Structure formats: structure tokens, C-alpha cells
Length: 322
Image 1 (cartoon, rainbow, N blue to C red):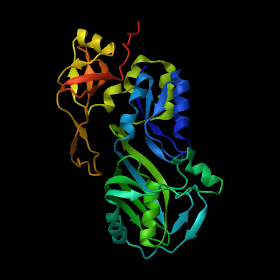
Image 2: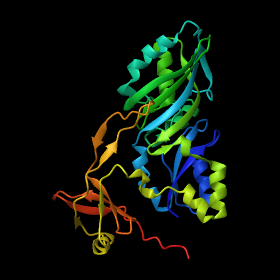
Image 3: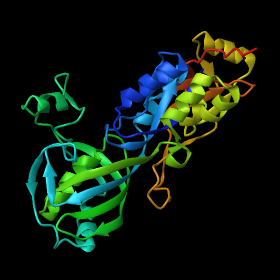
Image 4: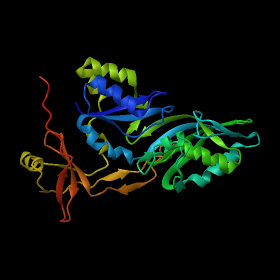
């Protein structure tokens, strides 16, 4: 079994908890996830099974989209409701126009400091472990990309409620955005709920609840697995493609270079909340390679010699079930 599962992660579980559930249900240890979600967060969590784990990195650097509800007028040490209350302020004077004006400063490529309670490591130590010991790390700002932020809903009050739709790149912390927005507005802010609605090609509309996915995996139903599993190349469609004949495929499986000319391909730039593409960027010096029967053989990496490619991530030949 190999492929990706588009899991709708429930609240109250870590991303690795989901991995453990899938490992048990699929009866395999070769399982990984495509981007951590905080335990309180829900939504799209791609899970790679079998040889699809070799392509998880294709997701980690991709675009994401979130629906976030935040509270203005409250600050916590974790930047969300799981943390200890730090300060409270009266946010009743803040308007929707104020929020939208402040959010304009968070578009594009911006510096962002990760939360003290995060998985970012310093000297091999996760920041959240140091914070729990009462000795939080001083984390440096990192460049992150925000493609769009829309205010979906605004409820005025001493603790104003704001719902945002966010399209962003990898490494972006919604909790940091909320904290920084509260600081700009002068009333503080904390994240109330977070739901990831998109990671790369995986969307919330097609996600399957974890318990249902596990039930299908445990049943071993061929029809159920066909509906559940996405082919490993679902995360590679931005790369140019080439089809090789059986002799060329044998050569690639032996680790030998091949002279081929893939069709040009482009990488999707993450879509904004309205669904409009924010542009396209030419793909890297890699290509996806298929056999004549349409099966994925390998990912190819370009050599310095034009149109000469080296096989990496070569997949095994799947033997059909009897």
C-alpha cells in the first residue's frame, strides 16, 4: 500500500497521534504526515503511507490555507486559549476597518518570530520544552510569506471576535500573526480556533474524518482503499513529466542516468482565499517519470549536462493483488 490520505484531523490530538492511528489501522510502520497541526487545531492533515513517505517534503514547502478565529483584548503565553492568561484589555473601540488596515502590514514576505511554545528547535531543544521549564528561548524572526488575509467576520465587543481566511507559505505561524496583530492594535490578541482548509493539493472539502479512514483501512476493502488513497504523484503534478520505455525504465531502476527531454512544467503558487492564483513560478530542475503503463517510476534530477537526468526516489514495482 502506498499513497496519501487526506485526513480531517480532530481537535485534541497531535499530528503524530494521527500517524499512530494510521500505522495501527494500516498495519504498517511506514507512515508520516505532511505538516504539523497544533493539538487544538483541526482540518487537513495529509498522511503518507508506504513509499509515499518519500514525497512528504513536497508538501512541507507548499502553500497552506486556514480559517482562524481570534479574540482581541486577551493575551496568553502560548498565543492561544491553551495558555496562561497574561493581560486583558478593552477592545470595544476596535472596528473592522481598524483590523483590515492593520492586516495590510502582514501581506507578502514578512519577518515573523515563532511562538515560544512551538516546535522550533535551538541547539536541538524544541522551544516548547524550554518554555514549559520556565526558561523560554529567544527565537529569531524568520521570513514567511502571506499571499492573502481576508476578514470573514467581525463581532465588536470588549473581547472582539475576528474570523480570518489566510493563504500562506510554509513555516507560517497563525498564532504569531494573531499575537502580532493584537500588538499592532494595542489590545492584545489570542487564537481561539484554527482549521486548516488546504495543504498543497489537499482540500478540506475532500478530507475524511480520522475514524472513518481507520475503519476503511482495517476492513481491507479494495473499493474503500481506492476511494481513500491518493496516488503518490498527487504532490508532484507541478513538475514536468516524461514517459520512458521498458528499457529506459530498467536503466533508471539500476540507478543509471538517462538522456530524456521532459515536457515543461510549472509549480503552482498557493491560491488566495478567493481562489485566484497568485502567479506561477517555473519548476526546479526535477521531473516525474512514468512507465508506459502509466505508473510512477521515479523523480529525476537534472545533471549539469543538458537533458541528462539522474533517478532519485525510485519506486518499487507494485505487484497486483491476486
